[in-house]
Length: 462
Ligand code: ARG
Image 1 (cartoon, rainbow, N blue to C red):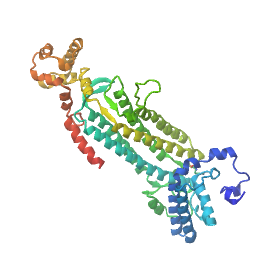
Image 2 (cartoon, protein in one colour):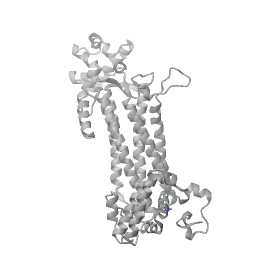
Image 3 (cartoon, helix red, strand yellow):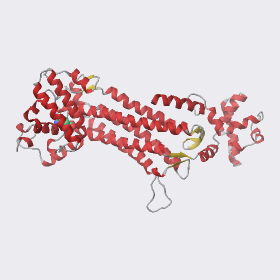
Image 4 (cartoon, rainbow, N blue to C red):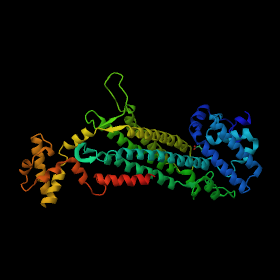
């Protein structure tokens, strides 16, 4: 075998790895996605080696030039990734030999693949978190746009999927704004927590070379170097945090999708989707099915799965590096890809829904949704205790139900059968818009509150 085809450890081995292990053990098809991070970190590492006079400047310069060339080749699709070199780190090192010859041998001084892979991986997760944060921002903006147009749109608010109290469609949409804002914060918190440079931990014990970890940490964009070399090569909590943040965000989007599916169903008909967000049936000509929303809901299962897998891989693993850890990347990449698509679809979905305002208002009036308002009125106007007022209001509901009327269809005389001392102005209490706008406590559904909140949201998104 020519040197070119040998593994870097071939001098110690009598046989190459078995064919099947080579295929199964190689991670190159997955971790080639780390090539930019790997080359970037190798260049910084080499700069540090030059600066600290650990390698000759001449060799260092050749390495950096060679790495730049490799980056260009990969970008242009002119780099052949080889399974026999296992992973991205060794594929690049081997290619460097091809380009600059034995000078390439200086690059891996004072580091190991163990600190190298964590460095690359952290850099990748940092970049990718920012992409997701950007997608979240755009979804939040779309929610605000839709909410802005629907501040005065009354719909039935549900608990237990039973009509509960009238709310504004904007208020309902903005509930998701708040969830997504926390999702964004979760990614941001993780960025803060993982912001320590692994480079220099080497295999597990650090290194005897006079390296400058502050230099590499700063150049790589980390806040500081990690404190313990064993912890550095052992833990993947930063990947778990990322997958957890993905899973929670996916869960929120799944609930949004499910809400839309219900509101769009033929039983509810409270919102409609643009045809762009629907598919037809191969047999039933009348059908328009909300497939994208269903995919958003379903794929949450994939995000949960990735989180569950990595937690299970880590459990019971002695500290420091084991090959078990290699599969962390496929999980994170899949989790990221899945959530990114889910966010894209959610953005489209929010842009392409239309509330059926007339039906929302009609449905808000059914199910006696202002019964609480009437009880509250008796408390405030007639100084009754809430329990007493509740009892009277429930009797009115029973009466309305028996007579097949909505509460706002009752006459003053009918209402007076249950409580005498009432004037005409009680009737407005049963108006759903009045009910909605009376919920003026901070965070409540009144139009005034919502407008203030939207103003605040617009500012914080700038
Ligand atoms: N491809 C490996 C991984 O992703 C890189 C680290 C290899 N380290 C080792 N000691 N075999 O985990």
